[in-house]
Length: 280
Image (cartoon, rainbow, N blue to C red):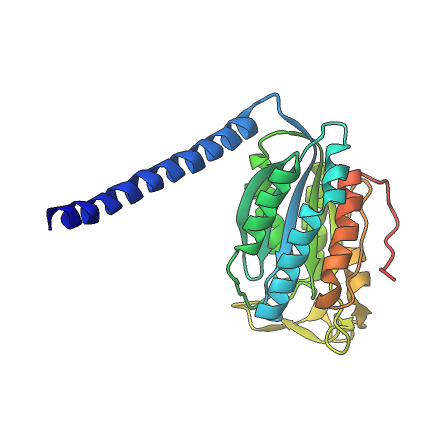
């Protein structure tokens, strides 16, 4: 009886010891990462903000296609080779999810080897599905400018905001996106775009009225005769800008992973691409 009782009491104790050891390892790993990011001498080739649309049109399936596409691209060995081949041999990544508002759901993460890349990919895959209603693109850019850019924990040769989405800004007139884009460009930020074009859903955008949350319905650009345009053209005119800015389209959410990987490799390789061409 005493032996059985002793055995029962020993298991929780052993479990707590194992748990404490695991927590210490995790804490030490986090501390080392923090120390690396806090090092004033740390330099990276690119600090890249991935801004992902989670508005009302992005259901659970579409959300997962985006996140899995990002994760697969970042942990790809050829991509990691491109990262380590840079002058500094490292990049910084962060992820922002945006709709009515924008939230940094993955803080700055240093990637300089396969293990770092896999760790970031794991964080992306573990994100819960966040939902919003509107596509407040200019508001997202404002939040990035005011709360995220200054938090870059290293000296970066290039700072890039990577905007993906399936709609135009329906919280403000297009000039609001122009203003925020120009302010970011003035701060030496490059903005690249990945419009997701869904056939029969958002082929044409920009005509008619839009809804600004809390302000009812307003006519686009102050009149009801604004012609429709394509989403990639709208991104080209109102979103992308800065040194070597470019745009790459995804033909639906199923094509997001391919389009993201191709654009990501271009971004981290710092290819001087100034023309915006849709994906084939």
